[in-house]
Image 1 (cartoon, helix red, strand yellow):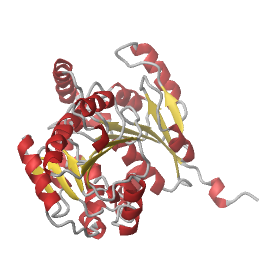
Image 2: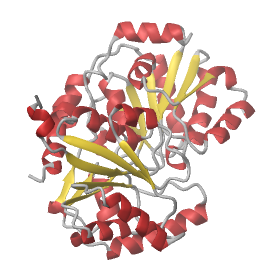
Image 3: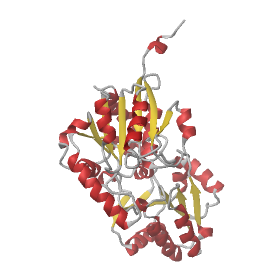
Length: 380
């Protein structure tokens, strides 16, 4: 006998993110949503134009996702790109969800419109361009502004952003603000609640029981500004001798950062943990969280860190929507300001209180916010 659920046709959703990287903010956002959405109703697949193999296929396979690779960018071979994309679209997707950091073009949107994909979502996750080279970054910015000026409301059915700043960055005046849906980068607040027993266990396993642990989670990229983070720590440790720095993530600048750590003689004081899928546990082990980013769309890790009750220091360019608790301070691009505040917290009271309920009440509970995305996916 065939069950009723087996007869229900799933809504097929094609996710197109920036290059998929384990531990990246956009990757985590998508995976969090997929885990909570009903797999009996939705089929999630992914499109990648990354030149490197996606390094989270295990997680995608576990979630029942199919991964499509395109072999080239439009700038390299436009006709081949179009042919390969059309082969993917031949699988009859109901929804195309494009997760965008900055504009390079909107050929995918144009083809999706031509193919009559019912729901086309353009979703902004950033507020600047994550390119190290200054000249290339300026060149990319010029292209971004040119493409943004040409983009229009006929190229998508839904326009989303993780913050007002991210909305302005991607859509500008081309898309009326009332058409833009702000989707909070919500989290599983129960998972990121403060758990003293887990904290003790993690600190013992990492041999940091007697340390003041400064933490950071993020890709090793231009945007995250690890160079400044290491310089901050290099000065803090002179005033807080038991300080340790915990770095979680991977990325193209990881080797540069490791070299900086070694050159400053900090190797025995810094834990470079790479990609981890237990960030909820590692946040428990920290005493303070630093995010000296050059720019952010919002800063999902700040929401997670605040939920666990951590004191947080963030760059003043981080959108103010990230301030949910009184535990976060925004600092200028000034090394001494970061050093002073970090030392002040290290020498102050280390009392820590669970803030997950506060985060949930502020509208960042995934259980609450997933309903909005659910309605978009069902085009209601």
